[in-house]
Image 1 (cartoon, rainbow, N blue to C red):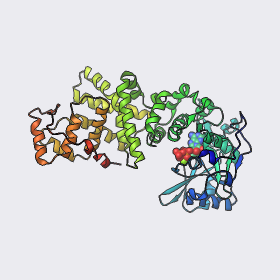
Image 2 (cartoon, helix red, strand yellow):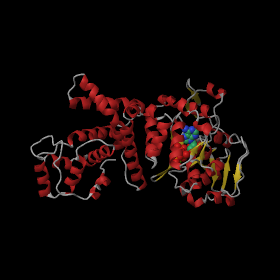
Image 3 (cartoon, rainbow, N blue to C red):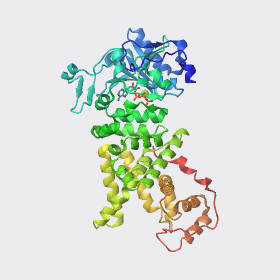
Image 4 (tube, rainbow, N blue to C red):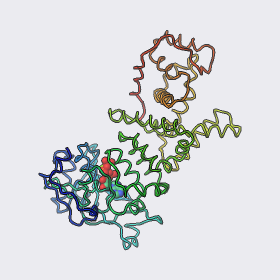
Length: 462
Ligand code: ATP
Ligand code: MG
């Protein structure tokens, strides 16, 4: 299909992948995009800005995704108008951001992001710290130096993200041979990769995200510096890393993204404790995390809700036993040791990735449940079923079992218990006998259908 899309596109001259000053212009007849595929609000914004005398284009992920036959997540507009000028054109517009000043134009629930053309950074600009600033390692801390369309194209991250679509003339402007890279399914940074990663280390995570999501290869110069520069991620504000991590793991290709992060040594700066567990118990840790991410990918593809709490609970779980054992070796009893380890682990993780409270609480609850699920005697099992977190705790138990944790059939017991009627339930509790801890369920007489692991649809929060 791509062949047909770009039939008449000329391959670029070698060595000219970036730094074009005149764009390749791809006319309506030479590409497959149609105005109607874009959000009508975004198209309306572009038309309005152009009518007011500004340059304006649809840009970034929406152009890229539509060329690839993917439904875009959102629509971004780039314009020569300053944020203040954009705001003046629209009643429903708000200026946001500090690092990048942007305008959000609201249409009910849809938000269109309008960004003013930006220039790459020159040394001269850096003297003016209001507009532009870098830290010692070259990271851009503020980036409000406005520029021309050509300059805007050069400061974008990947060639495939630097395509500009004009819905009025229906032409694509390509300054970085992005169409060529889309055709070859290749992710390529614009400019010198080391420099571009130093400017913004999050671009390393974006490389992984796009490669995983789009099933693209990463061009060799773009991939080459990553392992060495991975540690720069430690300088990124933890709140930004939380957002990026969610995008990496919740875009439907999280399991692949995880493999790539580990391979490119980006996992360690994001999840130091889990990375340590991965070295200590590679098979178990890898299976547990991959399985959690594959389950999540499936849910995303089915359009089911996913909760970051469950994912983080899984990502961190393999690091928990080591810590609890250490505390026990210091004389702390098992349960407080487990609680202490959970608390410390989350606090430490939040120094890298700022997991909001609304997720850390459920993580703790999922972990606590693992302690309580084996104790089923008397009324405990029924009380457990009424717990709003039961579903997540039970799913987590199944996840642990799928990674090879030995639980003596506990998952199956709970599967059966949910399917049982009242008298069967009473019988199941009786069969547990007097062992209050119920660590090992008595063998079931009747085999039940495994199809009843269905309640994963009702995760109740977020
Ligand atoms: P998606 O929205 O599907 O995740 P996207 O490519 O639209 O992908 P956004 O984060 O929405 O990504 O950013 C919009 C555009 O802004 C990108 O396509 C890219 O051109 C530019 N951009 C975003 N982040 C960076 C960055 N860190 N460095 C350089 N350019 C960036
Ligand atoms: Mg986008």
